[in-house]
Length: 313
Image: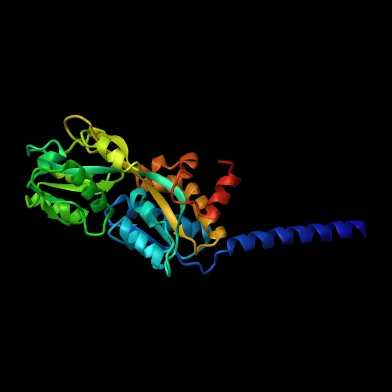
């Protein structure tokens, strides 16, 4: 009799574990996610596609939809309006979008990802070395309502050019095409290192990057979110010397409408998918548990905070 009771107890325990596992597997069944990702040719899109594939397999959900956008401002607008569930944004844009407002959702961070580097790209044959040399020239500052334009406008304001540039509002691929065709002399781009589209251009056309060393002290004082950084010549196999530029962190964001359980699962899934992310873009090598919590002044989502506490960060 005692043996039968022990057998029955063991069977109940096994069934209980099975039910628990099944419950975990099915916890997010029916969940559909939309990721606001940026331009298809940029690192945001590469990372978003990798995350979408990883989360689908990990959570047993339909592969999240990756939405092409113009970049950080567009991503934040979609997230706050409820048209996206997850977004990647540069920190300089995110810090200006943390206020709650009627009918809009509050952005909350899951993690700090990696840094974007400002590229001011020109043809190697042109006599340009600094931003000041762009005076009066046709230059793309990024698409309207893009994160690139936010940074470009700030850099140009600090540079105080003797003659305004002939401003063009082009996407990255449009900028590349215009530079190759000689319709512009330079373009601004903010992205991870390396950005594939710029690498491909460097194979076809001798390039150089302009140096921002003379502007960085003023930029850092006005916008502490920016860091001084170096772009090595090896990033794009360019000749010459490394250039000084600015770097800005990127955040993985959701809104206050997301449940804590789902937010925690997304963060855990991101760290579990680091190899997949690195294969998508080497910029994601910078993703680190200890750096990930550094999203101030954008607060962490309660679910993300729970995850980091559980892993004792």
